[in-house]
Image (cartoon, rainbow, N blue to C red):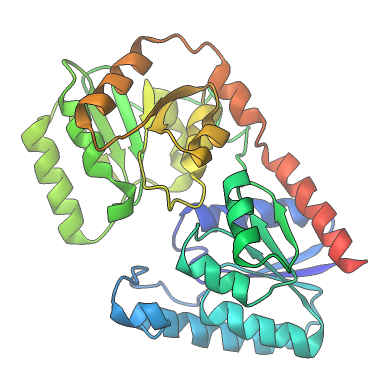
Length: 344
């Protein structure tokens, strides 16, 4: 089969959606012809938080719309069987119209999370919508019960992310608590910083990027609350991140419940790193017994208590065992079955 991924930011950004495209495409190529269509130039921004974004009329959405139209002309000449569209908005709409005219099957993976963008994706009636969690599956069924919806989570490469990876060298006071997150509001990184500051000991290693004003804000706050021996922020390529997971003692990220999935949890657990995260249906499904779930991370004292409890708990090999349930090889096999069903 011939499969086209439309992923505007692939090759330039390494968020969960782009990692999903890269890892799934790599495995599908074993049996199929797969092409990833991405932007020709480095995207200047991926933030769409303004009034026009509500109607997909912001600058970035329009760039993705033009990108999609150009790539669909190329796809039309190659007779693809499937389009897996990642960027939503105009891309989903254009791909749906294309699929109606040319018969190419359209698959949308719910990488945007339970919110307006995936509602729009569902209303466009793709041939299959892939929910990443049980909660996401139930939500999608309520939004559009008439289309095909399946549950297939994101995965993790168990060879790339492993306790056997060589550790990165860090000049931070132990224990080291790692947070890997884009510096966007819904990731709530500031809560992690403030909670770690409540601990008697321990450092925050923050791996993430964002707008310059965000970087300055977190760096200033980190040095104010923790000092240079207990705070460090790095921007690291995805291929280099495993060595930092292995060098840490604990992983935490307490993003809001609009989070689509949270691949970083899997990456941490694959390196046998326990996790502290919010206590909600999504995180319970992903993390299971491999960490501590905090009811309300906005309660900084409660969040700090969860961190302290996790640091003194011996989780043995539970994190690694939990991550093994999400092997990309298993996930790719689920997508193979979906493709065959849609093709038949």
